[in-house]
Picture (tube, rainbow, N blue to C red):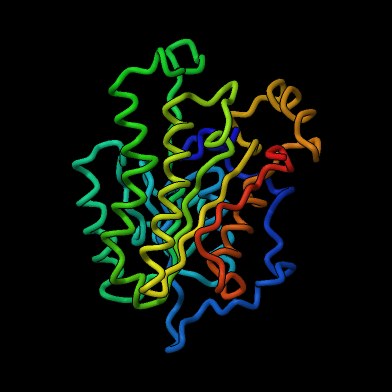
Length: 279
């Protein structure tokens, strides 16, 4: 389900492949004014929402620089940037982030960065797979979750601000519906980190606007991935007004919109993508 948004999410199925040509903002230029490709830095890119997002942007002509704790999988990831534009990093290791940023900057080589998508996130469970609540979550887990889900997004944004300024770029943070309610499966640390990331998005939108950089968030609800069992899906679907879970491709299309010229006056927003579950 959507509550494990990092690399553990499943790959989207062929039946939900993004129809880029039908997107009303597909005409958004994938080339900068001087003819160079637009560039995206995407964290948590190997599966689920991240994988669908990388695929959609690639189909629209963007160069994709990916960050993931997994090595690049050329068989599953069809974008042409490939291994040369992949940074393997464990974001829960605070010592690894400076190296990852340095590698990204080396690949950008002073060129504009048009979008930063902070998709990586972790939602640890107890040893028996149960939810970790505010009574049972160890302090080490709190620290790890907040480092990946909250600190990494702002540290990436701070480190790449000059490249984002060159493009008047866009930042999209991936929050969650659980940031605004107690959820039967998402742990307390995960939910709290997503609530904090929503607040951080507003702060960043205010602070980065002076540079022409827009900052928004998307808040997915229940999304169909390989860790969402048919039993859990059947349990959740009736409580969603649209009576179904979403797909990673549906989320990716909203992210693409927020990074496109069609959203040029949108900043500081958190867009719910949950089939009406928030109402």
